[in-house]
Image (cartoon, rainbow, N blue to C red; front, side, top):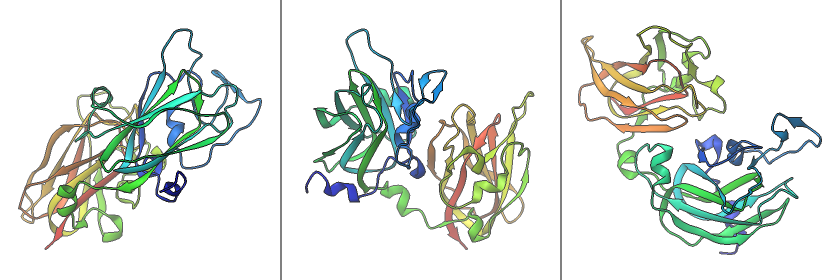
Length: 317
C-alpha cells in the first residue's frame, strides 16, 4: 500500500461518527474539538476573537520552555488504522515542525485521566510537517485501536487530524444485537417526559448520530433533589439484549449517571441497567442479561442534562 492509498478508507475519528477529542494539554488559541470536524478547514483573514485570530483548527500557545503539546482523540469507530493525515491548512508561521501519532486500546468508557494512563503504541514516529499542508503517513499495524494521540513538537496549530482505517466492532456486543426496539423508524415513541426545555425528547429515537446538541434531548437545570426521565414505548414486545446511551456533543451538560428500567406486559417494572456513571460526549454500550420481555422502557438521568440518542437493541417476540 502506498502512502496515499489509505485515504480512500473512512476516517474513523470523525465527529459525525461519534469521535471526540477527549483531552488536550493546551488550547489557548483554538479549540481541540476542531481537529475532527467533517468539513475541510476554512479561513477568514483578519477575524479576531478574545484569543486572537480565529482559526478552524487546534492551536496552542507559544512555548517558552522545553516540551510538546498533545491531544487525545477517541475514535468514533474503533478499528485498524491504515494511515493518518495531519492537515495544517491555513497555519503558516504558527504550525508545528514535527508530529508524533500514537494509539491505545482501552475497554469500556474510560475517563480522560484513565486514557492518558493507557499503554500507548507508536503509529507514526516523530516526523516533520510543513505549514498549510496535508501530510499523509501510512501505518503498518493490525491491532484494533480505540484512541489516538497527536503530539506536536514543540507547539502550534493543526487544522484536522484524519485517521483512516477499517472498523472493527466488539464482536461480543455485535453478536447480541438484533433490532433497535427504540428506533422511531421501527415504531417506537416517547410517551412521557419530565422535562424537554432545551431539546425535544423524540430526538432520542432519531436515526444516525447527532451533529449538534440541538438534535438530542436536553433538560433545564434542576434546583431540587429530583431527577429527569423519559419513557419510551418500544417498537413491540421484545427481549432487550443491549442498550446504548449516547451523550455525544454534550460536554459540560451531560448527565452524571443514568439508569434504565423495562415494563413487562403485566405492567410491572424491573431494572435493565442499574444506576451507572456516564462520561460526557461518549457512546456507552451495555449488555443486558434479563430474559423478561418488555413493552416500554424508562430512562432516568441524574440529576439532569442532555442525551443525544437512546438505542435499545433486542429481538421482537
